[in-house]
Image (tube, rainbow, N blue to C red):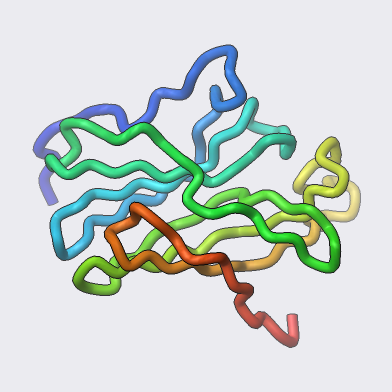
Length: 148
């Protein structure tokens, strides 16, 4: 493996609700599009306002589209949620699959990880599909993780 070049996909936006950009997941599709999904938030620790953002490059990473939220977080059992992080996989042709971590957002001031109990907020895995190289996405559906 050889590093050909270097650059920045997204630098964060100081003073905004997206100054923290973490958990990047990169994918190069068979068509040559480079995609990068990441968690955008006000800060590293807060759950409030966190979301999965997606950007892409069609010129091998020289320029990147403005990041956007490809999928709205669904509700589960009437509980609001946020999409903490995610990744994208090329399925061939123009088809993509996103796998995202949904987190209970009913108490956004609670930490994701509870140091005392070593537990997490309620978390679900959801998927969404794109048939047009990531421009639009299906509604998310939940992954069956039973019996966990």
